[in-house]
Length: 298
Image 1 (cartoon, helix red, strand yellow):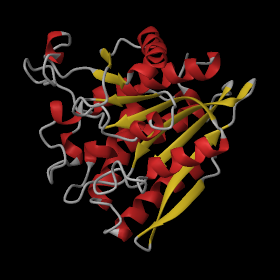
Image 2 (cartoon, one colour):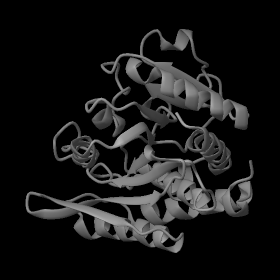
Image 3 (cartoon, helix red, strand yellow):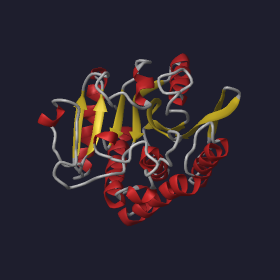
Image 4 (cartoon, helix red, strand yellow):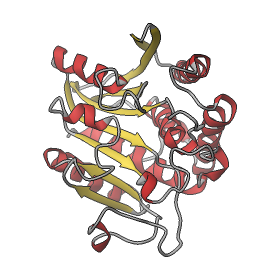
């Protein structure tokens, strides 16, 4: 399957780099206490989606009297229109960090996945959501953007077949010993940080395996998967947790963050640190896998 609208890997790499530089270089640290920066990031996402032909929904709420919003763009499905594949990434940063990898990389991939899907006619409806307020002090609270969003989708009875969370996905290395793990996990996975990971809880394992099979059928980029307990450090540390709590299948796509990336939540998490050729290869493979699921169902 060719990428939507003829995207080449070289062009994809350039676009991913441009998004990360805009978010983490030009805008920088962005959260509700840096309102102008957070709004600039939201406006950038809205403008990109608008240029791709999407009508963007701004789902607003307030935190301590301050306005903030989740952003949503939708590619309507055909035969399976009521079934939803949701792809999301948070666009805020932790205080003190420009957030190139966490999570400028996730937002950059989100924008390019939506661009490529704009050239497809999926059977399932595909929602692209940029979440606000993932980082502390909102994480695991009712004010976390994805918690607000997941609560509303459950209230409406939305048929979300899989939520895919893009979280810190831009750093890779072929060096021996570059990959770390929680205790015992290193017995089953490689010690080189050259792969992308799919992480799920046990209830989401079947959907994760379906996504993994589609990815491996479409790409030779190294992929590792694990379905495990949510209490393992890092396993539930992003927006997929909000959907687990509402009973939806959800998977985190990650480079494993602090288990390999030395600049995690750091002032030096800057755009030049990311590995853009690998990032582009992974994003292309993820698009092809998601396109397969959106066409065939989950």
